[in-house]
Image 1: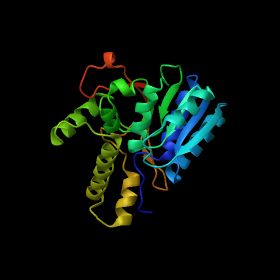
Image 2: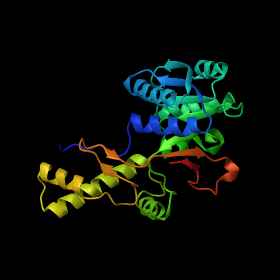
Image 3: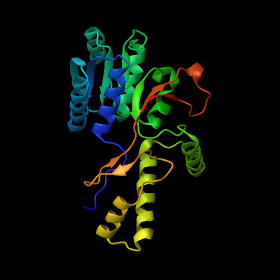
Image 4: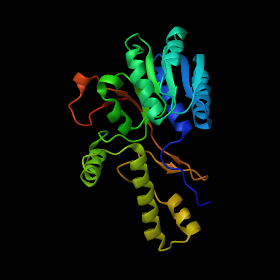
Length: 245
């Protein structure tokens, strides 16, 4: 009754990316999945969405957490001839896999590379040369519209030139809504504030079309982005083009 889930989970990351990718022609999928519950969940949710839309799964392979070498997994993905190579992992595993996918010519060879969870900070670490052509799902991007740009400019000044990830933006949105609900209810009682959080509309520079389900899960727009080629970027943090909502 007093719990909320705000920005993203494995369902939002997988379902959104699968729907947008299948509808744009990515019908057959191959998964490179980190071998623990998080990766399994990402893959399972994505497979469900892909198959519901008439897509197919050409195969999958699992790798240990913190794997330094993705060569064998990427070769299997290439030989599968799948239209989409999906990375069901996160953090340094995703960074390593994307870098090595570039070396193996995954995107250059005509396959689409999709990350089911990657953050703006990861793209920064990769650089456009390595990440170009990568598709990914995000709940917030600093350059989405005027209000997101204005808020991100405030964040950048506070954090010495860094732009926010969707996680940082989600923390801001959730805490702001909580504090507004404390003020509106004149209470810090958990049940009273939680009821007020469900009652008040979510209005901030982060969320679009947001509402809270009875179970505390926040529903809002998610976005499919594609990483720009280096020549397309205007510099700085200008990394991605919006593909679908």
